[in-house]
Length: 278
Image 1: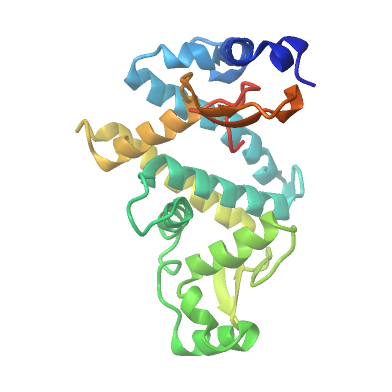
Image 2: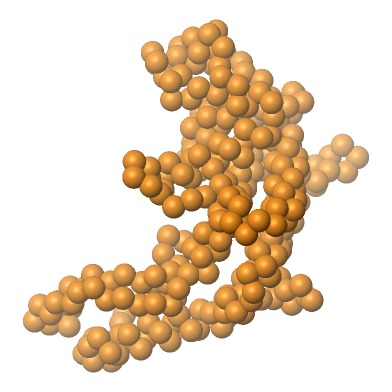
């Protein structure tokens, strides 16, 4: 429930509450580990020089993503520490998409949507994992794929990487079910089989982990100020860190406090101090 001051006090009271929530967010919410130990808050990261922002993002991904997912891939004496091949595959897809946003992001231009750019980033990273992932399907593979999904379906998944995005990533995220991509420990890497892609989730994770390291090394090695990697990381950080600017575009009172019709645009933070979009 909205506090009484905001229900009856109008725009000024609500704006004050928004600013207070945003300030509390910056002060209390952890961004990631600090270089010297302890934790960095969002507000602290926003004050860092750009070069330190980049390193803070790297540490964040290492701590909040890699160190935790790696636990699912650990084994001893041939036995998995935690047997979780499906979560490992799914979280590898999450990592691929994240790395695509970090290093291959860009502002949408005319004719492109944010989803187009997100998909392109996923595919650009995924295709680096194995020489077969960017290869077009053979005539026989296309025919087998169409037998599974319908005539001409291969036009929407013309490489194994596209199949991982379209079926493996998508169907596990939305419903946690396999469709067109199947995982097994009986093969070393991956293979097309009857129109479907079969892969080893532990290999998939290791291949992604290696490419993750390669891309960060390339990022640090390129000192050009406006190289594509740096432009993309800046964009990712800007979205992650957000802005405190509050812009109210219209307010119309409809007779009662509950009748306020608002069209608000908060750059980076909602009125609850959380980034829009999760």
